[in-house]
Image 1 (cartoon, rainbow, N blue to C red):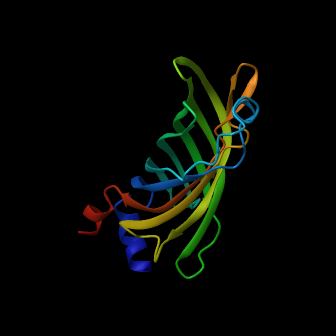
Image 2 (cartoon, rainbow, N blue to C red):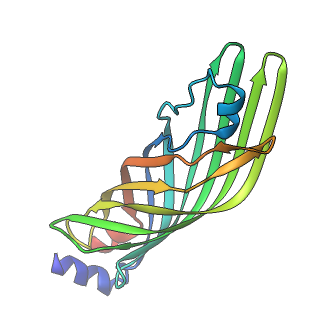
Length: 199
């Protein structure tokens, strides 16, 4: 492991770019005031939508820290009694997180996020269609862990959870909530250029 770190250090590849992809699930945190008041007969629970989670960024070896960007696109809805509700969210997120030690290959981390959120909610009641939109910046948190055998890996597996508190848009003066917990089960992370440096 020490030889690997020295070899990458000699080739200037300890600090490097990375990219990642993996499936994420979403879980509802709070109910929408708009739906509760207008359609109390509709179930609000988010069905745990599966979405692709795309990420890219820079790893800083000395600080043991990542700075990156992620993109997620969520679509889900509910319906009943001639009513259809559709939710759409696009999230472009800047993430910075610090690794908190290495426990025999289990490496936890935590950090803040700043997202540009593009939110859309469509309320279809029979032939009456109303669409509400909001574009906003939102603060959140990311935490999770890497499965990392050494700090000279060319690739690894990452699990992360994201939460953006109170994320919502306003529909007729009432909140429509988008504050899901996002759980990325397994993300494959590839460190650009390290494999070539090893060879």
